[in-house]
Length: 196
Length: 154
Image: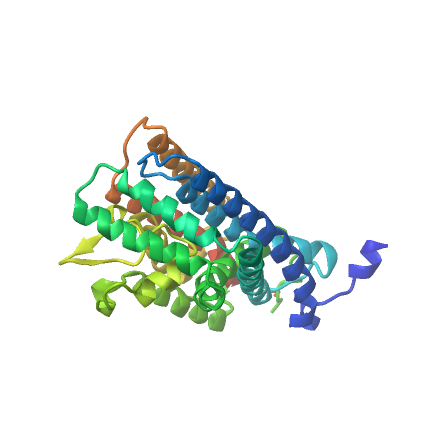
C-alpha cells in the first residue's frame, strides 16, 4: 500500500506545504528533548553547590543540545522520504532542514515562555548559579568578570522569547539546511540520471 | 563525463557559510559592543556555542563571537564548500568522504571526552583544527550531490 502511494511520485511536485508535517514532527520532538535536557540540567545546576569547574553542567548540556539540534535536518528528511515522497531533491532537502531548524527554535522559545509562567524565578536562579560557579573558578579576576558578563547575558537572552527566535533561527536554520542535504544523500531515492 | 549541477543552491549556501564564518569573527571584524551588552554576533551564536572567553581566539583586546572549535567548524565548512566543485569530482561513487566524516565526528567526541575526563588537555589550536576537519568533512560528504554524471549513448 505504501509502495503504491509513493510509486510514480516526482520531486517536482513537492511544495513547502508537503514539508511542513515532517518539519513539524521532527521539530516538535527535538525541541521537547532539547528543552527538557536544558531544563533538567538548569535545575541541577541551581540546586548544586558551585564547583568552580570550567565544564559546568549547563555548558555540557549546551554541547549535547547543539549536537542534537543539528540532527534535526537529517531526521526530517528521513521522515519525509519515508512518509511523503522518496524522491526529494537536494535543494528541497536543504529547505526542509532549514524549516525544521526554524521550527525547533520557535517551539523551544515557546516552551521557555510557558515555563517562565510556571517558574518565574527560573532565569534569575540560573544566572545566579552560573555566576556563583564562575566566581568559584581559579582564574584572574579580569577573566572571571568577562566570563560572568558573557555567561549571564547568554542565559538571559536564551530565556527571552523574541531574542531567542530572531537570533536563533538563522544559524540553527543554516546548519540544519546542511544536515538536510546530508539527509538527502543518505535517505533519498535518486530519480533517473539524465541521458544524452 | 560529469558536470556541475545545482549551481544556484551551491552559490546560495556558499554565501550563507561565508557569512557565518565572517560573522563568527565577532569583535575582531565588526567592532566592539556597547559596555554591558552582548555583541550582535555573539547573540547570533549563543544558541550553539558556550562562547567562553578563555576558549576563544582573541586579538588586541577583541574576541571572536564563537569558541575555537566552532570557529574551526565554520572555517572548515566554508573552505570545504568553496572547493566543492573540485572535490566533488573525486568523491562521486566513493565511500571515503563518509569514512572521513565518521572519523572527524569520532575525533571530536574522543577529544571532548578525553579533555573532560582529564586524560589529556586540548588547546585552542587543537580544538580549532579538529573543528575544521569536521566542517570540511561535512562539506566534502555532500559534494558528490553537486556533480551529475552524463551517460553518453552512441
